Image (cartoon, one colour):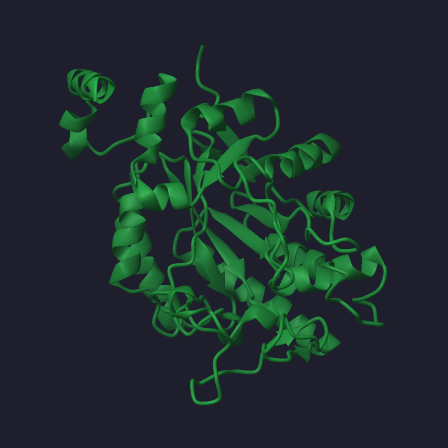
Length: 371
């Protein structure tokens, strides 16, 4: 029987050769938002990973929307030119693999150190900046207190998302993914745990949806129809009284009316020190519920590490696509291994043909069995 993971799928008008996705992963290796040689090699090796879609890391739509000083951005000409260089190199190696970019704004979780430097908020002598959010409530203890955005400033952020999307399409991205998960700015408007506004952007679910749906509407209206616009959400905050699956379903339905091509279902991130029951497949039920309720093309993500595990999620109808992050950092050829396990084929560059020969793989597998 043919592998579901390696079946083609359409997201909007974009055809993907298979249902395996490299999830966006922050590299914290940019210079004032601009891609560096690190991004050149990182994207190039993922280009021939065997995945059908590679999504570039969360990319800030304005300078204050970066998580750290080292975040990738798409807010000026230098950012655009540097990422175009990396993308052009990667696409030459990619074969049928498509490329997307996740556009984001970190909101109140901005102005911090890189994770391997502790991830704490920047101190007064470390070039911090004023963070923004739906309300003037800090993410956690000893975090910066954000400024609540005015209605006019919200319009400015919508415009920044559109400009970043237009820049991204200009340099060759075929998929634009809007980041409204993990406690960043759009999620901060969605979640009742953060959004304490009393104007048209707070209170009722319809009001809390207003800003994120405005971003989706504006981006979809600005881009050609052959560009797929997707959405990443947190299916739940994992906190009583917070954002949950029922609200996620309403959000996805509203986004579908505006033309989104898919939804990637993650979770959490809205508060510090929240217990998340992380385990293999722990977010898959969220994706399954949203898929069943909305019919949206749905992507599952989170501690999916084994090819048979990924295949089973698709066979059971819990999702339409599978995204992996750390598994691809650990093994940039994960897609090749998955194809071998599932009896399918994945793209690999011609200079590596000897490593993909049937004879070589048979010897490799026999030796692994003996070991």
